[in-house]
Image 1 (cartoon, one colour):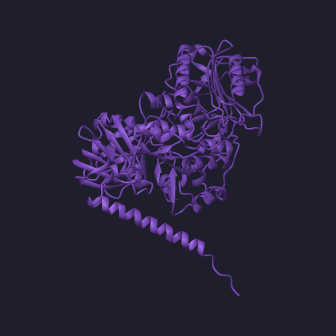
Image 2: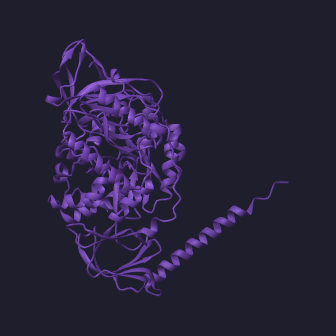
Image 3: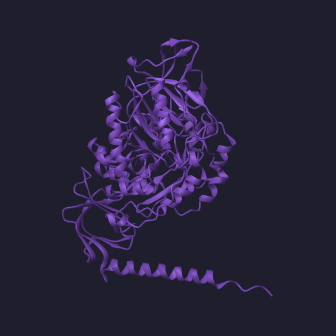
Length: 585
């Protein structure tokens, strides 16, 4: 006799359907005015990003959904909107929460009150250190945030074979996460050479996500190479840095994500590409932005202000920050102030200055109470710096002569120059020349896989004595140290080991300032306000050393990134990114 089917699943489905119908019934009654709306913004102006007009009327909200506009409503809770103008919630189309140096829930508390109601994150940094543990942590955190944090599955762990990473994520590792309600698709596919040369592991990942969303990462890619890359289903790029590059990508149907981070600032260069015709194919992102910049300038609100001040059409800037961003990621339930859309609303005093006066997230007024009582996932990766203490001799740089490659950095850019310079040369070793702004830079493997140390030289940090060390080193996050003398470099690295990761500034053998980042060597366990205070102390200390860079630690963190032109350094040595190969020092 066949077993009877379990009636429980059918009963649960029927209950869920009844609950959904009841919610729709409430929406209908509140939209028609039969019932008071849950929330009404009364007599306000709001920007319609479809037509570009600024309309006046009430905005009615039922639960997490807008149910009325262009009409009059009564609400159980009412906000006087007479002196305000409302816009849809801002969407950060590409962000590494780890680069804010705080946990995802602290990131949430930092940016949601500034109008960012949706953020699409790639936990690539943590995954390079912790593998699937990083994905588990971020998907759990995304379920606890007040803003809608969406997760892209880190596609390139490790980013390349030119560095030592702690983890490897294959297509088989990623696919179980695809059905997760917070997951959109595959994160930035930065291994462009692997795509063009049809690397089997690369193709396996791309094939597994065909028909879904695939983020791009294609700096300076053009012509046939760009065509081939796009033919694999890649949807966007946030690594565009010039107008001509932007226009070629837009012409070929690639969504342009205009970035304004802490180091990479591309808004000014790309604004001419943001027009009435292209704004539906653009979005904004921060990529990597620290809490000091967020506190002092803002988050996406800052990006919007900068774009408007630069002369971009106001309505099209807001369209790119909201509706166009949403559509590019298949989030068709948001990005408009219109009936049926998610009630993510930013209340401004003025459109041009984008001065945020209040925020509504999924129908909830954002106040400090909204962040209370949330259960954060337990910290992970608290023992990730597996590096033995070092001495100054570890940084000796053997060479066959005084002349060799030098990394040239420019403030506000992660693209570096490939220079050649003559350096002081004694006893078969090259030495730093601080008087000419030629400092030593080294990358030490920290994951316990090997004891590699890559050695090279860099121009652009500007200080004449001392050293800076960081456990943040995109993308494999080995320890990076730059210094005027080997002894100070050793002190900085050893302090970093004591902290379990972070940033350290040293001069004349003394630690001037530091910031512990014990979670995977990337994130603090402290509130963002405390991280901001310590960053301010660090910034002052490094300026006193004579470094002119606005963000020296994040500039240092991008020197080991061997997927961004032109010359980089990893624990394996100097990398000519244009040729995608290690070169002799």
